[in-house]
Length: 220
Image (cartoon, rainbow, N blue to C red):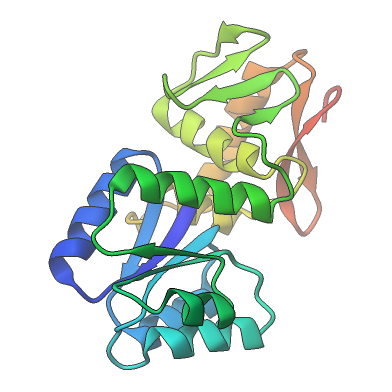
């Protein structure tokens, strides 16, 4: 999962970014409403965590612009009050400060699952399942041996099984802070993953002009 965190409190933003990334959630953090609005238009995210009291452009305006563009991105508001107003303005959920990290994680997972049209808590594609507790993939009930980066690429693909991810989208999610990694690196990891999945009933297909998609079925 990749989220946009719009929070101007440096201490809270730093803590949330580190804690969520430790839990396997990739975070793009901005501290200004104008930056948040720009990131929402330019980058790919699974959810938005939005503080209302942002400088530059407040959270209400960020949310209003998001919905005016008809972006269906799930949005969770962090604030001290104004719950009803936030939900009426187009937010999907609200969490009052102070809050427990575990509750934020649970609400984010629920929002993203609901947005994808499924309440199933597992990340899975046919016999391939990601075990979040052990942080590893299981294929036909057996652990799948993968390098950290192979696992990171496969996690991106399994999050939206059947839907394509471009090389750049995969790159942004797997190597968010490494500008020296080229899109061709994605081809290498996809090639390795195809070997790992060969004959398993799960495959990575190439959709011309769109990217890669994880699907059930025979060889791609």
